[in-house]
Amino acid sequence: MSAEGISRVTMRLDDLANKHIVSESADGRIHCHSLVREYCHRVLSRPDRERLHQRAAECYEQKEDYLAAAHHRFEGGDLAQALTLLTDHAQAIINAGGAGALLEQLSRFQRRLLNTEQWIALCKAKGDAHRMRGDGTAAGDSSGHAAGQCTHEQESQHGITALRASADHFFQISTLRTSREPPVRVYDAGRLAPIE
Image (cartoon, rainbow, N blue to C red; front, top):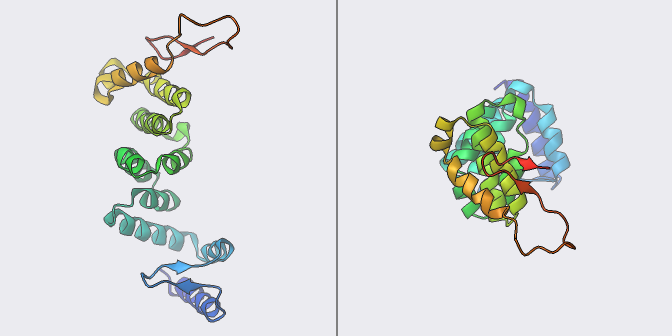
């Protein structure tokens, strides 16, 4: 990291600490207002910011804080590794109560930048997170997006058959429906695509 970039930030942080705008906790974390954090972030050059994000990601990976690690990988420009962290550890993140945070981070990825394998993994993780939150419609939609991209070989590799069964469960049509109920979304069990 460039000495000038670090010295500029260090000097400013010291000034802010002296004015009690920035503080450091016993565990070494720096606490400050988000505007102060944004300002310090902008003062750094792009290469310095990317290096700091990569170092932070490595630290969080060692602590098995995959959400924070993925955030820093993403901000540091390593999108593939950020997505891999989120999808490989989706169940652990969800089980730790992070379904909402997982969905928020997954929403940052653009479909056009992902290959088919990455897209399927992303959709599966989104479906799992939506299911945990009790949102069957969104879970089925995510599973449908994943299934729509799969070849038969990929279906067996990624457990899409289980996703299809799960989505079918969410979208079964009751034979006891009355004519007063609003129309429901109907899915073709073979493709998980909505039938309009």
